[in-house]
Image 1 (cartoon, one colour):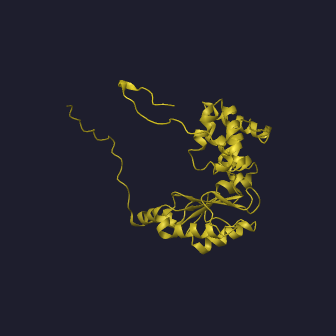
Image 2 (tube, one colour):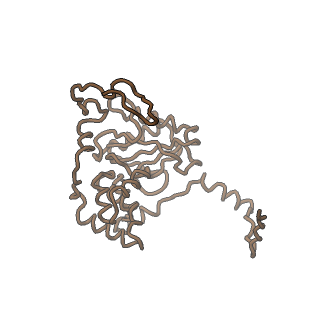
Image 3 (cartoon, one colour):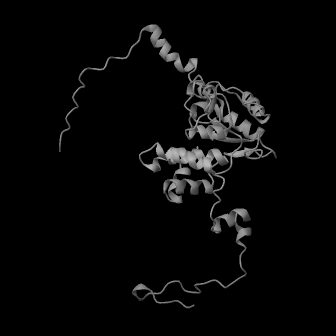
Length: 290
């Protein structure tokens, strides 16, 4: 193809404007994704929703009934589908969209925004190591590094949200680094299925995950007794055990530590009190108009 006329009568782009044809490229071979992942991305398919049985449909309807606008139930409903499969699958996206009369894109936008919704299958337990500033300085980075190496099956350290073992099977563990877990007074901390284990060291963290792999459930430092991730997801969706004793055990666990209450106790011992609120709030200063 020769050079063509362009705006203003000038010509640019001298020479050939196309490349000679060559052999077809094997896109699967050139892609960093697996063949199965490429096929999943390029093949239109309807997710199988059969995993969400009548009991889950009924729970979804109950969630919707709690809100004046049905779409407000999306966050707890994502926890509900995560309690079924251990993550938010494409089928879970479709399920939520149908229940709430939303588009898949609207649901996916929320599911991919919040870090507590996982897009890959998780282990029986989710271990979250705080690596924010204070915990990191106190040893959180060292704990995370040690666990990613210790949980490796082939000598290659695990990465964020990688799983040791078969996802969902007993003893399997998904590891992640977390931003602030709001326990700076007890750092470095980690959580197992969102329950706290305070004042950790690399050695104590290794002992903890080894116990989890053996099927044990070491008691958290505070909070509810430890259970598996899917059970916790069901509770985050708003569904607790019907047995009263089990229910009370889940919600009445100790939540404050001595360190947490130290400031309040010091104030009480020394008689410190906050100034009383004035009966009339002070007038706001007037802003000079220009």
